[in-house]
Length: 293
Image (cartoon, rainbow, N blue to C red; front, side, top):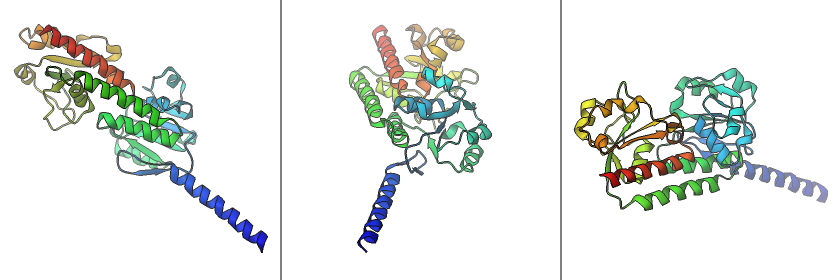
């Protein structure tokens, strides 16, 4: 009897330990869905460049077995097998990798693709960052899911943003037009993370009140608003012909003060830790505009 009782206690302890472990690996994604894993993921398919960057930032880059064509940071990400491109995923390749977790950018792929991925029977984490701090919370959650240091990466990101807020909080306000595309002319509304980034720098998006997250605007509307600066993003932060249309508007305040700013698209547009660094460069560039006014 004693041996049988001891055995039952041992089995009960194992069961309790297993349940506790499973409960520990549990997060809520940006859609409100709960993702539960029996243990930290070891084979991850990351279907967005910003998610791949975040996994490397929390120390879990070696657990990525598949990613997308544009995932090129850090350098090690270039060597990961490609299973997706701009708006499509090779489901056969994903399945062949036998992942135990799939990460996907919600608006980066159509609902049909998400549904097809769910049919693989693999836990699916959907990322849809809507604010600067959501980048930090994403780092925390990915750290939990992959067994990495999400807390450390999140703390470093929050500290960088807090330092920028404090540095530029008392600066003279600037009005900024953020140009996403030239033809048609498109911008971002206040719903986008970049608008929050402008506020960190002591600036305001002149079209933040518009409803769509990426609205089309008229050339005449920008001219009428007469922004203090015009900002866009290009690959590598290299200036292109994107500002040609504005240079012809010599009476524009932004043109008169040489306040045409080009950011690195990969860093400012991806919701990863490097966004804080590029935001720091934007703040510095805007501060230079203040000095020239």
